Amino acid sequence: SAVISQKPSRDICQRGTSLTIQCQVDSQVTMMFWYRQQPGQSLTLIATANQGSEATYESGFVIDKFPISRPNLTFSTLTVSNMSPEDSSIYLCSVEGLGTSKDYEQYFGPGTRLTVT
Amino acid sequence: GENVEQHPSTLSVQEGDSAVIKCTYSDSASNYFPWYKQELGKRPQLIIDIRSNVGEKKDQRIAVTLNKTAKHFSLHITETQPEDSAVYFCAARGYGQNFVFGPGTRLSVLP
Image (cartoon, rainbow over all chains, first blue to last red; front, side):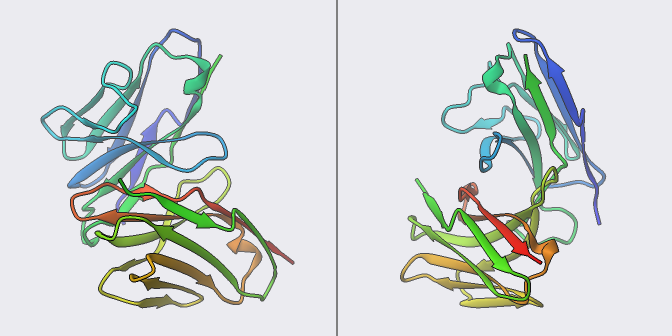
């Protein structure tokens, strides 16, 4: 089965700085998404990473705070900008259209645990 | 937009007993309903899903049932084992829409 990896797996950052998270899939996928999971909470969609065009953001998330790139069908990055302690969370990428998987099936990367001090 | 509720928020069962988690959704256009299992410190794993043209689906000890009229779907785990202990999330999705996840159920299987 395909492998979805994320880098870094965890980081501790100072407030006011930015962190870029990478998501790599070892085969081409149709869709890539970025989620946030705050401690003890459910999954909240940040945005859909569109290949070759601007990401589509959900309500409450903006490009200036969470710029996203997707240069090809196997890779995406999420940047958390000008961080504050409220950004401490797990950030997960997910993919759809993976190999022979059926439409709508989404598979998650291992996540990046971010702590902002 | 879609809203997904999930009950109970926590569930403890004895090993070997059955566990049932129920989700309700608000958008009648939703047509895909997956269930994810998330063990502590791990990624969510897709364990079973159902589409709106099917009433029930089973995979070994887990099954999902869907009632489109009432707009609810349920996860059933039989013969529970300690390794079933995890947080379970349901989700709903309509055509051209994104997933909306429920708040999660923490299942503890007591040996």
